[in-house]
Image 1 (spheres, rainbow, N blue to C red):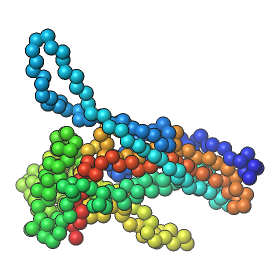
Image 2 (spheres, one colour):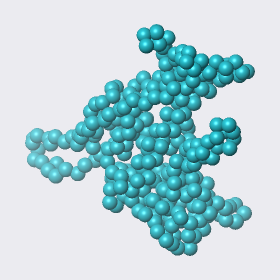
Image 3 (spheres, one colour):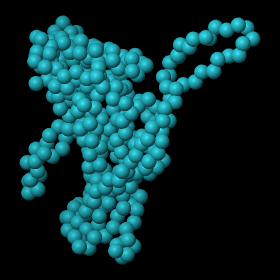
Image 4 (cartoon, rainbow, N blue to C red):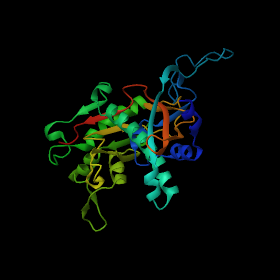
Amino acid sequence: MGKLQELRVVDPHSTELVSGYRAPNLVGVGEIMPIVEVNKEAGVYTEYGPDASVIHAGLEQPLGSARKYIDMTVAKGDYRAVKFGVNVPLFDEEGEEVADRSAWEDRKSTFGAHVMQLFMEKTIADYLQNPAKYAVGYKAALVGAARWNDFVGSDPLADVTAMLDALELVHDCEADELNIALGPKVYSKLRNHPQLKVTAANGDARNPTLADLAAKFGCNEVKVLRGKFAETFNPKDPRATIFAHLWGKVAIGYRPMVQPTIDQPLWGAITRRKGYPITEEYRNNEIDAEVKAVKDKWGLHVRADNRGYLISDAID
């Protein structure tokens, strides 16, 4: 064991690769529950109250009276991170066969980060697609003709308006500051909904873009939830791999945060220990490989069950 520890080194090149890695199309970990760096594995955060003005009684006072003291409401809560890790072997035999060893090592390193990132997204997807995680009044389960694939009986504009109205009040913001994220199959159905068609320059009806949908809904942006994982995999023929979507028949409303920090009015976040992820490289002679050991420390931290809105079973 002592010998192995002597061979184990932190790999700054690979660490830089995995630390800078972000799957740009993952909306869950990228935006709905964004990554927020914290100074230690467990701690206390301070949260401030509404940004807007608060109406206080007693502001009108006789001349010479002392002014009233007011302050934002302050709340505190706990966060915690746990350890995660994967080993990515760089087999000697495989390395001898590749044409560009540097590119091969980089690809292996980012693969470790990709696995971590996808696991984060799955953690968030499992949480946010569960109606039990939402407060009453911040979720709707569409049934029958109300589902958006019924182009006659459904009313997606009314459903989304109800979502935005609820979120406006709890977030102290306007609808045009809120985002909506759609499962990929939900987006495909909405693009064909007659209520959401857009009139082209020649007068013909065309399918809406994401920007068109945002304009129709009156929100800031509409995004498509991404992320696939290998559901069936044949190591002898990787090309036969079948992938499954992480996100299903849902629409989720949320307030995006620019440069999120732990003290913002977040719905939730991935609280990650600063300095992670990192990679350690060591030699494993039993398998004839150099090993990239990717390590991370993070946890899913959710503040409140009424800061997001779920439309489940949006389509059949």
